[in-house]
Amino acid sequence: MSLGFRSVLLAAAFASQIIVLSFYVPQRWGQYHARMIRRYPPEQYLRLYPLPKQIIESKLILFRRVQFGIGCFAALVLVAALIQSPSSKVFAAYMSGILVLQLGVVLYIAMPLGIKISKAFRGMRPSSARSAELRPWRITDFVSPSWIVFGLVLQTLGLACVAVGYLYWPKALPPAVILMASGVVLLGIMVYSLFSPRGFSRPDPYMSDADTFSERQRRYRVRFLAGALNGPGEALIVLSCAPFMHIENADVCISVSVVIQLWALWFISSQLQDLEKRDFSVYRDDSPRHVAP
Image (cartoon, rainbow, N blue to C red; front, side, top):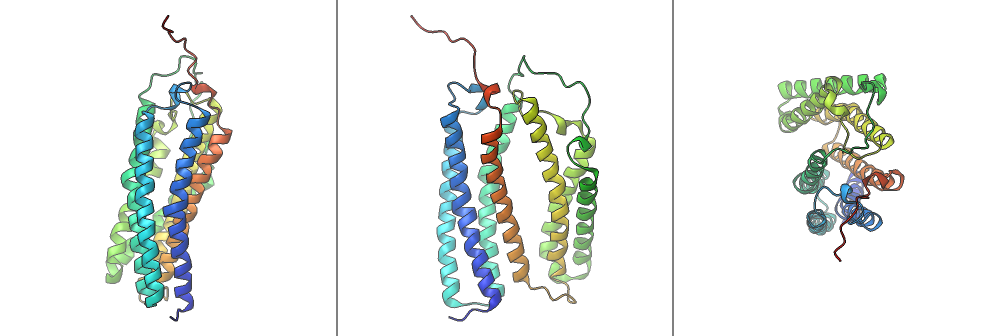
């Protein structure tokens, strides 16, 4: 078995991708919810759980089991690739295929669960003790104008590169279609954030004022930071297909995998930090309960 330097990098990125996305993140996500239920039991913090605990736990178990299965399969693929020592292009194709499966589980299990929880929160009766917001919020209260400009400009330039690749480089057609769709959606979200007041709505009717501000700030920063990073990423992927560029597809696959892993680690870390810093006393159900004689 003889591996080149690029294949070694691919193997390292592939192994890290399996560990982070299929084992570490699902395990830590389950631990986060278990810790939250242990610290803030539904019997005392009823407002914190807009969905029944059983529904959330069943989805988390399904997510963890499916990701574990994908991780085991991916480990076998990695070992087989190391034994066969294929070209870096084939190695990158293996890693990218597994990444699609791992992200597919997020799209079909984790993301719908988050959307259901958000909708259930918005459907709850507002708190009678909630303080009024006396002045209209502006997006610049949460994210600096420079980041807004960076996000919009870089995402627009990325889409321009994708369009050029789509028109002039046949090799770039398959990734260009996917990148164009995702880039347009992200740009639309950023533009919508600039003009729609709905983005300033409370994540839930009971969250404290300080936590509401922090959540809004995080939400807007993530959107425009994603645009600032996604635009150059789209350009890099499409330019790797250009005949005058000497960028290997394997290098692009490694970069995409590393970025997604870093995002996943940041996401789970932010959840755990939120559990430590957030004021959960506002979700406590202090209403008197009828006790049977």
